[in-house]
Image 1 (cartoon, one colour):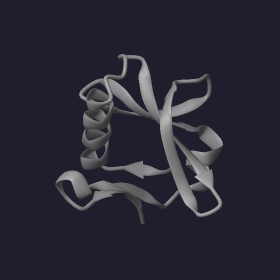
Image 2: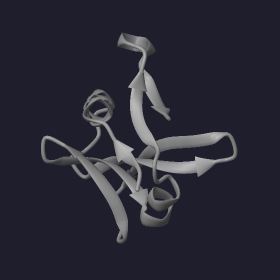
Image 3: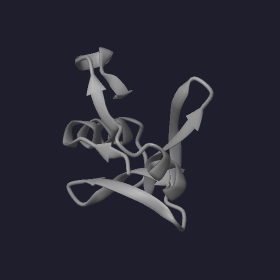
Image 4: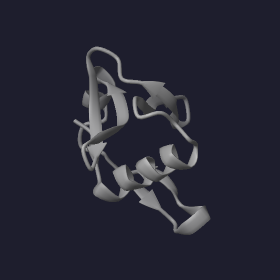
Length: 87
């Protein structure tokens, strides 16, 4: 299963607040040809979720999370240059 760092969940929580997202909005991670992509969505049945301070901030389909087993989602860079990275 994908591992998500505390730094990444905090980054996602800040991103949702900055976007003015509702409390039931999360960032969804999907696999695309060149890596991964994220967008705002809602938690769906069967999703794996990751939370920050009790609030779900990231949702991934279970099979995608299993496919990414052994990988870690973290943040690279600082300030406005910060972004998600997988290793």
